[in-house]
Length: 193
Image (cartoon, rainbow, N blue to C red):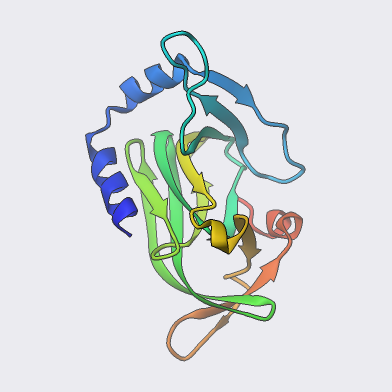
């Protein structure tokens, strides 16, 4: 949780134009497109003074969304991430992951807001572990920082798609959201939902 608070504090001080100018000096490679409605991911490798890639304890990437691209609702295991809006705007929905059940994730909605350039969304196992991004009013871009495999004893990082819209609302207001394959989530979770 402390990581999230510090990243959010730092983001409030970041000049987005300066950050993007620095990213423009890095080695940026486009990842292969996915067969889903995910945004285009471009991996960023920051360079040292001799032009060699720096060895960092995190991954950085730009996610370029067309108006129809969506980051479908999904939860994370053994990682933290931050998503700074550097262009356009998004509807961001977050959920706390309360527990896992056979074939489902029990989540509680925490936030549903419009994030414009300069806004940041963070996630960890402590808070807002599930997120869902939909661009609003055109294309949009995020600058993401991802730290995977936080605890080697927990094994690999895992990302799991869920269906909160098709889930069952429980007495306490949480949702039993079925786990789904990403291809299925991509078919259901389009920009109009």
